[in-house]
Length: 271
Ligand code: ADP
Ligand code: MG
Image (cartoon, rainbow, N blue to C red; front, side, top):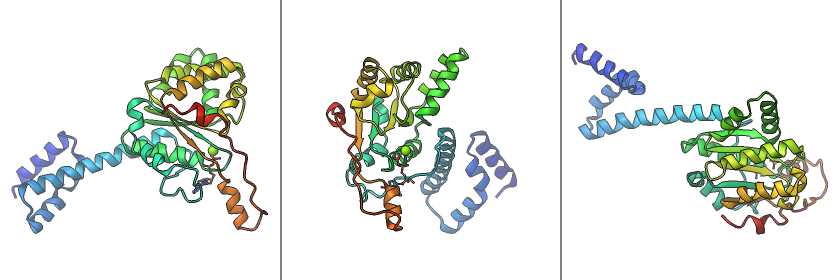
C-alpha cells in the first residue's frame, strides 16, 4: 500500500472527524486482508464502528451533564420485590417515546421503595436514547431558583432547567415549599409544559400537594399541567432498605407502609 495514499486516507478521515476509524485504520485493513469481506461489508463495518464510538462518546457526555447522584440501572431493579410496579410501563418509558410528546412521568411511593432508583435508571435510559437529561433534587432546584431570583438571574436559571429534554426532579414533597418557592416551581412547570418532559418522584399523595405547596390553587395549577400528558407509576410496597435489614435479622415482622396513592390514580388517569 502506498504510504502517500495511507497518509491521505488518515488525513481525510480526520478532516471528516471520523477519529475512531482514523486511529484504527491499520488494524481494520489487516482484518480485511485476512477475512476478505466484500467491499460493501468492509464499508459497513468501518462506518458502524465509527457510529458506535460516537454514540458511546455522546452517552458518556450526556451522563456527565445529567448529574445523576449514583449509578442505578433497570437491570438492577428487582421487579419481583415490587410487584406494584408495572414493569411493562417502565420498559416502555425506558424506550423514551414519552419525551417526543413532552409527556411527564410521576413516581409515587413511600420512602425506600425505589423511586430514586427508577428515576435515575429511566434518566440513564433517556440519555442512552439520545436525549438531554438533567437530574436534580427538588430541594436543590428550589434553592437554585430562589438564589437566581434574588440575584436577578431567574430568567437564565429557568432557561437552564427548561432546556434538557427530560428534567428529573427527585423527592418532591419531603419538605413543604415556602410560598415563594411554590411560585418559582409553578413558573418552571408552566415553562416546560408541552415542551419538555418532567420526571418527578414524590412521597406525597396528589391530594396532599396543596399542603406541600402551601396553596391549594397553585397546587391545582401545577398538577393540572403536570398530569395533563402523564404516566403514573405508583409503588405500593415495602421499603427495600427495610427488607435488607430484616434479612440481616435487625427487624421484626413486616409492617406494610400506608399507601400514598390516595387520589393519585384517579387524578392521573389521563396518560
Ligand atoms: P426511594 O427513592 O423510594 O426512597 P430508593 O430508590 O432510594 O428509594 O431505594 C433505596 C435503596 O434500595 C437504593 O439503594 C435502591 O437502589 C434500592 N432498591 C429499592 N428498590 C429496589 C428494587 N426493587 N430492586 C433493587 N434495588 C432496590
Ligand atoms: Mg428517593
